[in-house]
Length: 125
Image (cartoon, rainbow, N blue to C red):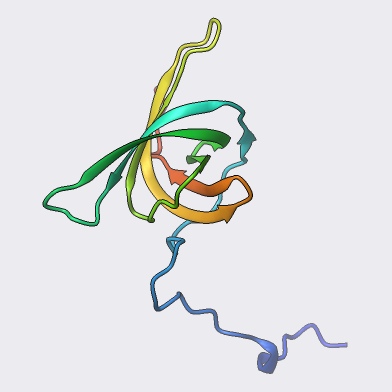
């Protein structure tokens, strides 16, 4: 047997040409940690740059990683929209806010699963 790859079996994968509900650059490079609970979010609709609309909604927390957050919402959220999620304090833990960009939105049994890419943080030594 030969260790060479037969080029007739290779396929060229091209980025999508039409509208998509997933930004092509999204690649998972961090482990996801499951989360439970609800939070409040403000979604900024960027479809009209002259007058962006803001919507407040309740979200179900799904998972967290070093590069983003997964939530479940009742209505679809277009990719590219900005979103801020307010996670309330619980017990001795402080609450915090996460701001990012929607990179994916898929239909889910409970609504729509939304992937949010958050800016990377530089840790001080």
